[in-house]
Length: 252
Image (cartoon, rainbow, N blue to C red; front, side):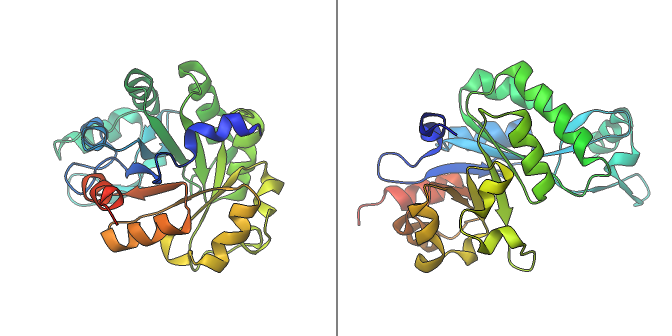
């Protein structure tokens, strides 16, 4: 991928970029327009969001695979139509946005958006195809793709060659791409998004030397944010953009 395409996602002004994790979820309902608006109001450079699919083919912005229906029964999101899901969500007072709605919002706000495709859906290839088509309709500027499932990352990198894609990594879910420096490139990805406890100078150094884009999650402690910034990460995903930004911009 051209370095110019990665430039908007590189750290600027001496600090990492800050993404509101599912919006500013410490103070607003996660993965809602309200939470995304609040993240930007708090100074975040962008937002992070999750994408799932419903039984009737709608792409929705929702993290959890299950949702509780009236009576307390938990049902998989992919077994419900969008109408059923919307009705269940509205009982809690918070509507679930569609991917199209959030992408339209992102284009209007002009912020960055890290779109994570959930890997525990029943039809990953379908999710990738539909997500790519939706992103192309709204415009690719400021969009970054991520996912834990290597197939999803590879598929999105193939379908959207001008959109950066990164492999999510976490302790306990290690795979062969994590330990092979540059192995993420086998997927067509431009970098990795490790969980923040994985990051040490030794872990990060070869990734930085290889020119990988490195964003880390979910960082809510101010001291952790400062430490990770000193290691040279490009981006920090946090539930608390206001506090993390204050820590990053505090004079040393």
